[in-house]
Image (cartoon, rainbow, N blue to C red; front, side, top):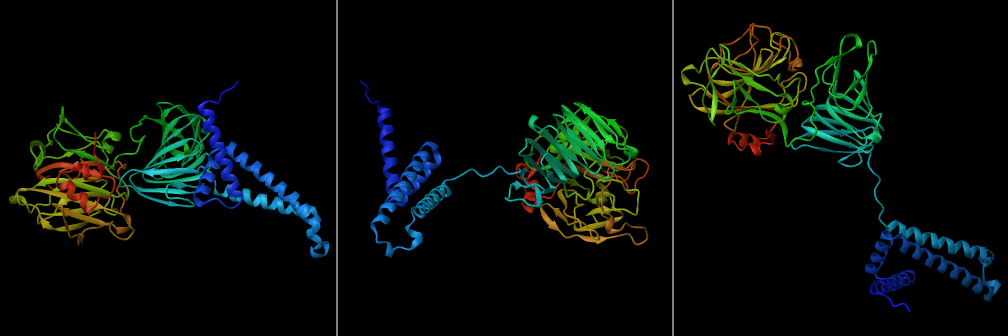
Length: 519
């Protein structure tokens, strides 16, 4: 003799409740709460939905049979001819059944289709999306993601993940194919997405099961660095050369469409989103041999450092925080980092101390780029004007502040360059000790000066100089006397910060600056 277990009893009671609610629902006697419970139950259980369907079919058959009997008992004269036929009753019953099932199914939640791609960004990023994005974090086929500042991570539904760094433009052309029109990105391709293709203006890169970085910055250039696996690279102009590149190797576009091997370097291609705006910091406190190594996103991908030594190296003394570099009028120092290029937004922050007795000299402070061409704004620099005021300079033009800092004390300087429109300076701001200073444009009246249409910092020209402190110009030419004073806590960021974040830099609250400055 079988005894019902506790579990069987519970299941039986549950089924009885379900049957009761189905009956009440079909009789239009269920409350809103009971109806909601029933719909949720049917959505969670295909077996229960089958029970409901069976009940609906029974109800339809009963309706059909009852209608036949009703037709036979009624006087023919009182019924329209089309209503007397049992086939019509079957149709009506079936229609009622379809409507009832459709109503229930419309209430049962179904999962949304997987989006073509999704994206997220690092804090402080400036992103724009065009071309069919259906939600804020979704991308559709044909969408273009433009990263003006910071970084974005894109996850495609076919198993491809990429991290894109500003300034970049990425278009999702179709399933398994994207266009990196400009910028730098790292791609991780799952096995099921083998054959995934990245197009740039100069290259076609076909994945053969790998992780790789693509650099499409600038005109007539392109690089591919393979971290794991294998890719096939083809040039899109000139001779249309094709080669396969394996892990630990890299190629770049050369003359007339050829490909040449270059040193492999994975560091410039970020594998994950940074914690803030990419930046580099030189506190000048921890010296390793004759070098000061940088910190932050840019330092991690470039290994940037300032190296002491030689007849022009500055000294090291007490700084605003810890140690600082000291310049006595014959010293300058160059870093191994080329600086921020093109029209990319930037922030430069540092502490400086200028003796009051030399405050009328136009000392150079921070600079990089190509400054030999007077017809182009291809260099970028910050210097001290003739009255001890900060000047932002490019192409023999300048923007000058109104506050003199040549008083023998430490002052915090923050220079911000935002978006650029041809025919004018980029959106520029200057802060002295966290207070915004006004900027007035100036230009030499006797010498050639560059057009405002030409602003674009050039860092890859043979005459370009990397980030330099205390000197303007390259090793063959200089335009100003070397700095007399001290510099501490140099920070350069690939983007703009807010006034609140400038205040945080001034107060040395670096974790609130919005910049990724970690080691």
